[in-house]
Length: 294
Image 1 (cartoon, one colour):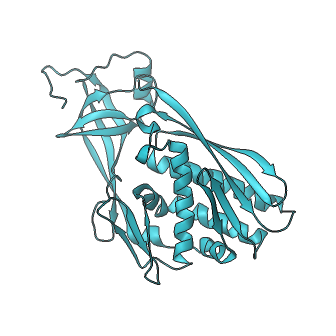
Image 2: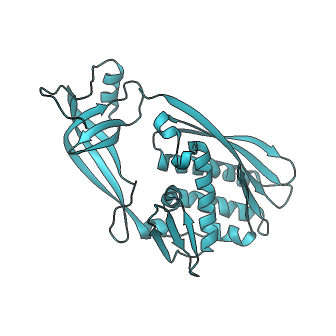
Image 3: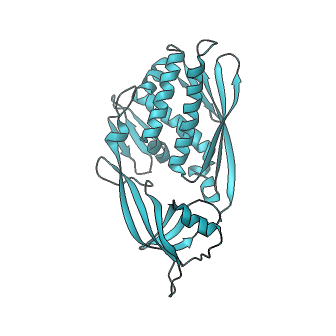
């Protein structure tokens, strides 16, 4: 079983305005921010355990401290560019707010994938903001969109003419009252630009690397390539965790879902491919012949 590692990173949300705040509005902002951090993390790293804690409510303007904790397999512990998962998640969250600020409450004129793997998002005025691939993918996720909009709406309720900022280890990221209105404006980017194609397949899958104790993804050989699939068949997992022998080269017959995001041009989106094993039929089988696992 791959080693699990924990990392954490801190950020804060400062709200300008009155020294008092409606308890429901405050609790909703905190709840939505925690759900946003979790949604962004799981969108990029679905096998990660995520917790968000409130570290302090500081005096003066409402400054809410958060601690994001992520527990993931070692191979997922380091995200793109060498940043730990927790810190990368916070950066992605800030990127999503900055995209909404950039769009100024309007639909994007164009969303394009660049040759270097980043996204270029063009606003109605023809201005482009370039963002990393994971931030672009998070931005067009419907759950992320809804949570960001809710946060903007409740910040506006608290202080229609106030600024707010998000602070991480790179400094403060400021947003004006006009930015808040843009953030609170719903967009249709997810439905208009992204669809997810799901195909259900039943076949034999050769086991390359199982998880004998946990519930992280298994590595299989499917056709001529290696895939990573999360097993959702709890009965099968229980038999493995209770000691059923399994070796590299064994195989299972399973029904699984293959999903991939498709853009408006009917082109698959890089790094959006996912596999989920819904049902394992029968038990683990040993291959009578040597199988090439490469």
